Length: 471
Ligand SMILES: Cc1cc2nc3c(=O)[nH]c(=O)nc-3n(C[C@H](O)[C@H](O)[C@H](O)COP(=O)(O)OP(=O)(O)OC[C@H]3O[C@@H](n4cnc5c(N)ncnc54)[C@H](O)[C@@H]3O)c2cc1C
Image (cartoon, rainbow, N blue to C red; front, side, top):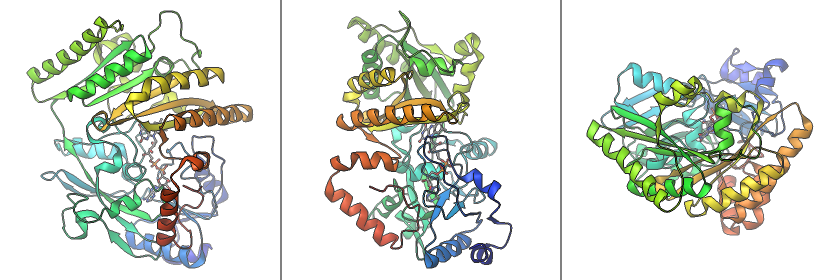
């Protein structure tokens, strides 16, 4: 097999050393490790085309990968074969400041984009995920992930205005307005074929470029923290703040998440008497001080209104005050960031869902009960998205990946959480195949049939990331 890929790529871009291949066999999650036979590191679209043609001809499974930080086993080569490591395709191909659209390759990382925008003094920004600095922006667009600007602009797939993709026969397609215009300004108005590659976990083609929208960067920005003393109080404040349309981001972290941020490795599952239940953080940006003052005032009024209804909150605290109290809070002040407190124990997993804000309180309460019963501190990370039309609610657990018994407990708690959230109408995003199989009975059969037909049409021999999105 090595000779086939050597011929396309030249040596130096094919990894066959068993020790080096171990780097591609797992991720942070409890998903089973599988080592590929080879990894290839193309640097051009033509090389990706060559790799795909060889794989298609010889029916060799291909798993695209950049940093492998997806926390769902999605870049583990479940069927073996070849990992297509795209980290060296890392050019910011174009930056159109006037139209606020950029074109990037798969290997462009969150930190790289931040550095580029800062060093070129470009007055634009993007949504950053809480994922590591080294993670790929394009991969998260393909996974329809979430960022610190999802409140206004939705999940990451919605930022994409077009993709360039290598299909199973080795041909290349450009989607969206890019099919005709040299400026990939929008997914509209042709049929939205970009959607054939959003949410498909690399099973429909290898994306070699993404065009996506940037947004204005305002000169003033502040992050305020509010301690809330009930689950309902946290989510009701979130819902009311959404309707004001004054916040750039609102996050809700349950008390164990907050403690983990402050260095408590395994917080006790039950809160201490009188302890706040949620930390809300609210990001505000503004062009002028008066605008910022208005937005802060609006936040205070929402909290006062809820206090009058019996809820309890502390006064909002800003980052400099928090950093003065504990320098570790600085980690949470700037994006992108590395949330080491989530990754330093080796294992990280979650049942991360998108769902309706109206059901956050009851779903969080049930999730807390399940996690505590299984002996896990109920770490929750949540945020409203797309103006509050939906949001993310994720139940997070850290674990020791060398501890087989703990992995079994993780699987059990995740399964129970999944059943509960599915019943509540929430959907696990970046859905691992184990979860999809559990949901199968509830999925609309028409949707399943259409997904299967689409996949068979785009990838008749099943070479792209086999085992993923599989019922
Ligand atoms: C601590 C922590 C916090 C996180 N917080 C967030 C968060 O707030 N929001 C969020 O959305 N995510 C979050 N994540 C998950 C993760 O960081 C993102 O999903 C990230 O963008 C994935 O990038 P990656 O380079 O690791 O992709 P990989 O894991 O390498 O790949 C992800 C998937 O995309 C496919 N793929 C990769 N490149 C291509 C391509 N070019 N064409 C087709 N398919 C491709 C892969 O096969 C795989 O299915 C977090 C992760 C960690 C560890």
